Length: 166
Ligand SMILES: [Zn+2]
Image (cartoon, rainbow, N blue to C red; front, side):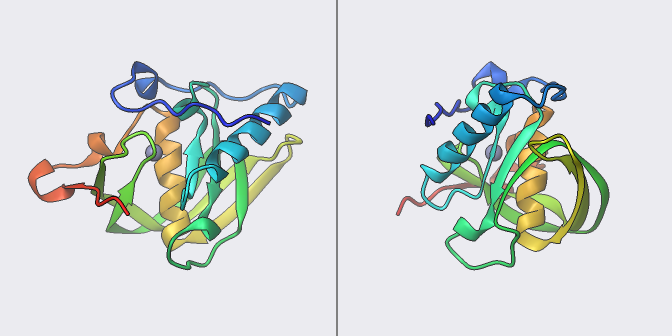
């Protein structure tokens, strides 16, 4: 397993559209293992998308159990080809990004989502989740379409915050 390099804004790869995964083979398994190890190598990191590691594939890694504060969660998830089926109850939430390490931002997210995805075997699954885990999934899925939170804020003066380092 390998800890992968994280591309940071304004790396052009972060603005590209990722491709659907069609081969559920050993190279996918190996990439998923590397992605999980990479997520786990960053303190309190709850999510990572494949394009942040320079790989333009529709894969996101989520583990909200690693958050600084406790939130209800489904533990470690590797979502392949995720698609949001339902999203409701939108609110403004604060979020950060490994690729934008110096800032956090206020972004509008659905508090409740249902998402379909494939697992490492290629089986189709459905996940319904809420609150922080739902935000994390939406944030990581935005990366698959080349969207960063910087693209979603309407007013940098009120919605962008310099991160306090601990
Ligand atoms: Zn991010």
